[in-house]
Length: 342
Ligand code: Q9C
Ligand code: ZN
Image 1 (cartoon, protein in one colour):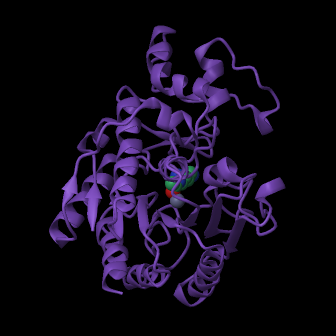
Image 2: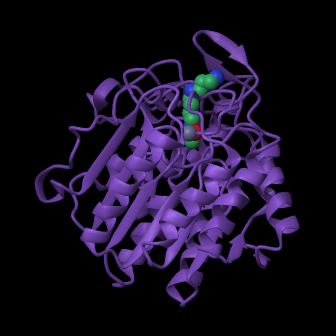
């Protein structure tokens, strides 16, 4: 299985996150990407390629143009306005009640950023662009006939919706790749999201559509981030009704519980008849993850990979979360080799 990886990802090195009023080191840090890269290299999984070039239009097929412009120019505007930190929000457009982007950068930050875990640093735009292009490159590898490919994206993307970043992410790499597949006329997409957190961004982008089935297993949103979506009764709307499926799971979930929901999601994906499967691969379900409360073990990732392989679909893995810095690499590789060996 080929991996697509941009070593530039380290230019996005958030100085901090603000959690419950506390300024703390950001859990989403460059060592995550470095460690997964090293583990993939040492595993001999397959070639590791740099992203090809794509265009902004591939990104704005999913994301709002004003939002993308904010991601591109926001850091410079923030500095020009005299702010000393990286770009952070301190006001929020709750439930998108207003559709007029503010003129000033501190207003825009709140308009386009949904929480205080996510920030824009000097190198962020370049990294986001390369990360999205990594997903698009890996998609082309699968569309070209490979059984699977791995987009080693960083930062993660599944909390990014059409016009807002959040949860450490700013561009939804999985959604951008899925949209490109649809735009090529290659058929329908299923997204299986196994990150610990609900992929509210991916759900939001495709909620009214029937050309993509979104299935997500995650922590109960009543108890953990992103808090305001991920419930089982969110099933899609309009033409998209029935094409969104959430599996909120209790704190402390281990393999015995997890595998039941995973098997159910696999049944739905199978019945949908997707032409490609995109896996939002987060390994923050790991028992020692510092920000999460599931209890999966390293060997369980091989089981997840094997269950995914049973679907027999061309499969694009896209890196999402996972914050146990010493085990992120082995857990990701387990999932990918578990897929390959099945
Ligand atoms: N200090 C993903 O896994 N809140 N995003 C964390 C911990 C935000 C997670 C608080 C969690 C975002 C892609
Ligand atoms: Zn997560």
